[in-house]
Image (cartoon, rainbow, N blue to C red; front, side):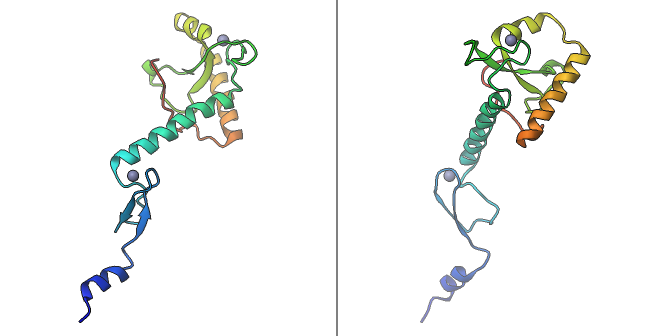
Length: 147
Ligand SMILES: [Zn+2]
Ligand SMILES: [Zn+2]
């Protein structure tokens, strides 16, 4: 006599066998929307995505400080991502609020206050560049280190 329960579970259209998008483990009986086998894999994948976005912004800004125009390739300056609107004023770690800045401009900027007209121009420039590359301004970016 055939085992009816096992047949019905094999034919059950709600059961799917998909591979975890991060570690390739097979997820049995998952809902089709589920991409990862575990929360750990999901977190790792999100982290990798954010790290990728981090480097994407360097490409977007041509590896050049947005304030003084020096480049890490031509001038050998060290670059980092910088908040246009600082975190203390509610600025977020997103593609629309981050720009590439050299170490020198970054440390000087802390002392001087960016004028609102400059901030507006910067935000506009970033938005234009994001738009050209199809980067959403609210794309989360994983910040490396402080600030
Ligand atoms: Zn996994
Ligand atoms: Zn600079």
